[in-house]
Length: 240
Image 1: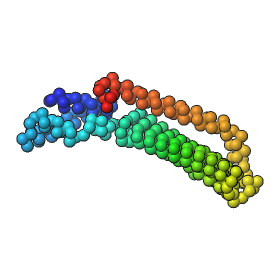
Image 2: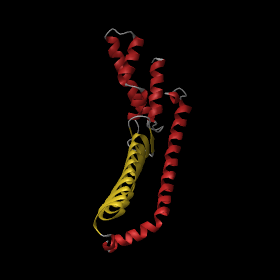
Image 3: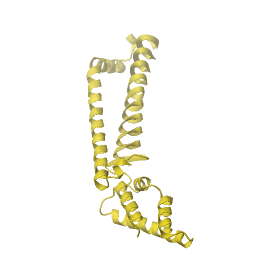
Image 4: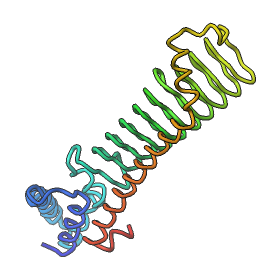
């Protein structure tokens, strides 16, 4: 087999990051596929070395092919392209328990667009807590610039209970806005919620920030760990 084909397979398996028990069989299957393609090209009159390079080009970049061969949902999935899927997922798109990406979906998520139970992002949709430039939390707390939620606190707040510079809701309080009912008439369950949240808003914000600092540190550790693994395996790939 040519050195070019060997190097290509090495790089694919570095990105695939499979366990030692799985890697040999996966590499052998890809090798057989490539050799079959090379033989087909040679049969068409293409010189051997040109056939190897054509087979590699037709199969695709090592990074893309390797990512496609990763386990379905590993503990950690960090990648530079495509959708990362793992318990900890970091990538342009990320789906996981903890997800970080341009678009992220997870129990705890943050990114340009983040969706999950607890979400922070430019646009954040959190079932329980959403915080961001635009934040949405249908049954919990939305906090940020423009917010929509059951309990909404922000510059512009829209919710069942809304408090902000501009507030609109069934029960709302702010510099300006609209309230369907006076805050004095707020039902007891929501009054209890407000009495609990408002005095401890700063503390809750600090706890929430602390959780996401911890999550951010964890994802950055995962990124460092992945790039270090690639750099050790093949220094040329760290520059790609």
